[in-house]
Structure formats: structure tokens, C-alpha cells
Length: 148
Image (spheres, rainbow, N blue to C red):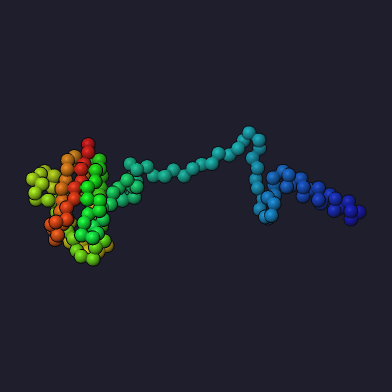
């Protein structure tokens, strides 16, 4: 009788493993869908660049102020793009339109003086070449080319 019980127990265990109901080496059970009715995975949609907040879009450039220079010094972006300047220097910096650019209609507002770790953002809503300098260190210059 014991031998019959062991044989039946072993057979049931083999059937369960063979049917995919018990995964080997764990106590977890696996649910199987009837053949032809596989459940499709539902992906979680990521926010599209058009609907994601501007500072969370991967294409939003950041210009770092470091080693008394803008990095990168020149960028090209489409109309409507927001650029962030972040000061990584220990010295304060302040953005202002380059007075030598001569393009009064392509001037951006001055930033406040930015200490280390502080940032300034500006959204470019008009095509053209926007030239800027650091008001504290006028030899620091950069440009943003905005395309339609």
C-alpha cells in the first residue's frame, strides 16, 4: 500500500511539473492560458515628448556653465524649445543678450546672478540666432540657433 501511495504521489508530481503548473526549484505556481488565448502584455505608455513637461523631455538641452565657459557654447533647437543653463562654477554668472549681436528683436531677458548649482530657463519662441554673454565675465559667450 505504501508503495502504491508513493507511486501515485510521484506520478501526480510529474504531471504537475509536466503541465507547467509548478516551476522546478520554487514554490511558485505558474498560470497557463488555454492554447490560442495567450494574454498580450499591456505596455505602460511613456509620456510623449509633446505632452511631457519640458524639463522632463530627453531632448531639452542643458547648457552647463563651467570652467568660465558655456558648455556647449552653441546649440541649435526648434522653435518652442526651452533651454536650461546651470552654473557649475563656484563663481556667480549672469546671462544677458550679447550687445554686439545687434539683433534687438532676438534678445532674451537677463537671468539673475546664478550661484553654483542654480539654473535659468528660457523658452525660444522665435527663429533666429540668439547670442548671449555672461554679464559678470563678458568674455564668456554662446549662441542658440532657433529653427522654424
